Image 1 (cartoon, rainbow, N blue to C red):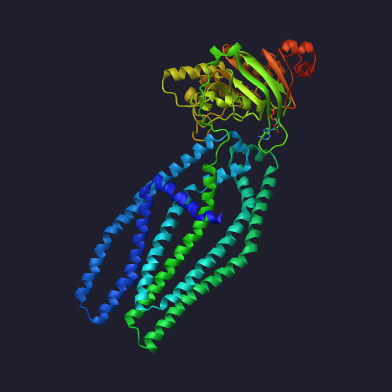
Image 2 (tube, rainbow, N blue to C red):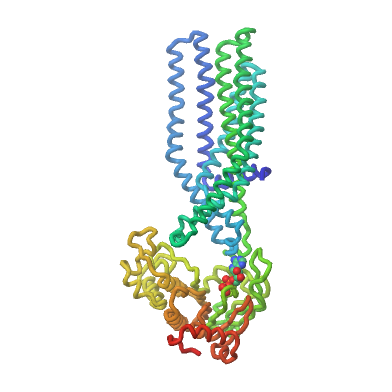
Length: 607
Ligand code: ADP
């Protein structure tokens, strides 16, 4: 990590330079101007004044010099005020926007499995966190290091002109200052690293407490006590680490201060006083300027070393950001390739989708979740996937959409291996609704179209999709109909719909796409069996000319399909039409009868 300190800072400065050259140049000039001011007033100006008094220059001459200096600095002062209050905030906003866009782009283009990879997810959250503060800090620190080093060298040069040996009193402590700074920084780095698990515990609790999804559980259960304990564990863990290291860092900081301040300040003062008072080899003006220059150099170098220490911290942040931005996705969401054929028209033998001996293992897991899946689905077929929890149904659907790549065997779309197809175009073939659908704090129409409706034709489409999902009448009763904002996140009069109603909106969203294949992965769990049955009847009617996959727990619904696949422990245990499976009298028939007993007298008559 430490070896990459320069590489990391260079990486981010190059990136910032690309985004906003003016901000980098502006910061450099602003810092340079600050140090020039400092050098001028504390050394040159002072030198001129003391010498003027010694040489008996006239009051008018001195006043003219002061007035000229004031005018000389007036213009840069106006420019730096403009820079600080107008240019910097504006360009900082541009930088944040550009960096966030890069992060968002990356986050949406990596494969889904990244979100299930703790390391990757941590990296992502860390990269997003403090992004604004870090970017500004990085530019500032790098410019401070450069300009203050240059300014210190100038001040040292002046001191050297007055006395060649006095430099020795400064050079040693300054090198020591860097060395001590580095040791203190290494210890802090170690401490922060050891604190990370505790910080993550605290952050997890913070996150869950402000997320609306958790609010109900917190109120209705004793989980708050558990979370509080977790938070306290994190808090005390951090405190223990601070205690473990505090004495060491305090001692080092104390030694460093003594070393720097005592040696520089007392050393230079004693030495120059000796020359003024004992050997009479130094003038009073020389002593005054030397004293002031020493002060300037010491503070400038302290600022530079502080900036170096902060840059080490920045470097950790940058390393994380770099790893995130440079991550090479296994499945690049922007992958180009062969455009998928219009399978509805050109599928060989009418086969739209074919799984050939497909197996799948999740990243980091040893045991496969799916084994030897073989399935050929023809044009406009309606396929139900059923099975107990954990049987592999959702994983199957994820493979179908290429959210993951198969680990074994191959998946064909219209005769082509899906790995060779243009991924965005392939994804566009699907209209989907999942059990873990998300509703956005946008209008109903936007939630269905997933963009802002532009004209009446768009609204007509939304209307039709809502009708097909069986929720149009409910939407009409909302305060602004299809333009009602869902959730109360941004709107006081935002609509709060029931779970079942929201699921129907998620189903309407699937219809709004220009899809070839519809996938419904239990977007109906909040509906009662009758409502679910009716929803699927509607869906299947509306999708007569589409290929449909749907996952359902309720076999009464599955019975609507042309073919049913029963998954068990990641394998296809049985398949066939409802009638065929009932006739076989195997596992499916057994499950169906057990479920039917729960609905005696219900509406279903499919057996
Ligand atoms: P189903 O949809 O039939 O309930 P899933 O396909 O969701 O089943 O899960 C099948 C198995 O894969 C389960 O044992 C589950 O724990 C495991 N699984 C699901 N998602 C992941 C994941 N991201 N990483 C590791 N294992 C997973």
